[in-house]
Length: 370
Ligand SMILES: Cc1ncc(COP(=O)(O)O)c(C=O)c1O
Image 1 (tube, rainbow, N blue to C red):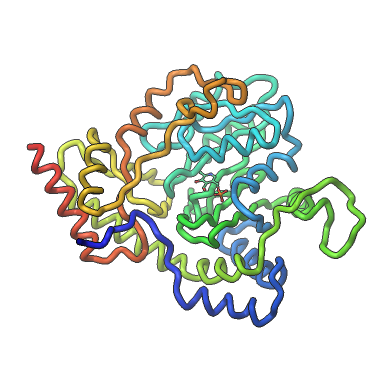
Image 2: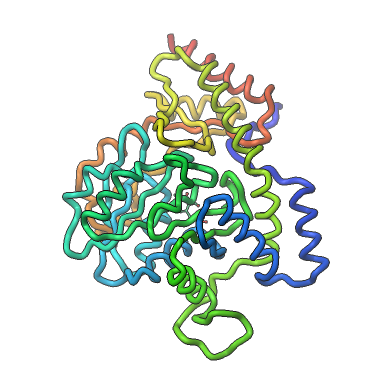
């Protein structure tokens, strides 16, 4: 029996172990020096003035919304095709996510459709940089400015991704990265809030630290909670951030090989890349008419794939229409992209032989249908 070819797994080795040993030697596990080091590296990577580490990306979005004063009675525009956490963080903040159709090419929010979603309660828009590509931050920036609303970028999948030469997550008032286990770089769980605004950074830190500006004091200026990071996560995050350039290069090579060797298959086409975007091919994805059959065929050959995110307007958790606005709109693009999308094995550790097997099986699948 052949080993399963995994769709995505992190690159973890002695580099992480070495950093973890520093934590064990220091016997100090709660966020401290290594967390500062990790935050500094992330600020440098992204060009953001501030980088505030938090326990995960979902709560990162929640914190951004709260420190921007967004909550009960407010509306926030989100793309209809995203991981559910984007919208749920808005709900957690007490506001209402308003679903916006995506673009057919980038799969990111289509701002031209957002105009009609505006009400006098709209306070923010959350562009999501999906599958390692960037949303069109130029038009989103114009839109937000014209309507006086904030931008909170969900760059959960965006480590290393740039738009017009600038790292995603740094265009709006605030943005977040996720370091969940399947991301391009990971801490297992983790998130980083990005902002250039000193006051917002301070407020974000306070909210994640029981409403105080530093640890070890017990007079609390505001109500806050515990969304802290740990030194263990920071240790892994430091090693992972150092590996990012190598991971990005390898993922590009994986992507380019799939695209080269699978070209010409009928109705099987790679995803579009906006020329202003420097993507990170977190996943290499294709669109095809028979994504489900192909996925089942590959599974039977021990090749894991992943289908695209289930559009939010179809999520059972929103079917009562109490928490999310805009469900009844026409989301035929989201539906088509969901139905047609398939992500292939794309891990840093994917070997040349494994990739050959995936390519051969996909060719076999199409040959059998000719
Ligand atoms: C687009 C998107 N938004 C938000 C999140 C939530 O991040 P986390 O898992 O770190 O809470 C994720 C991934 O997990 C994501 O892919």
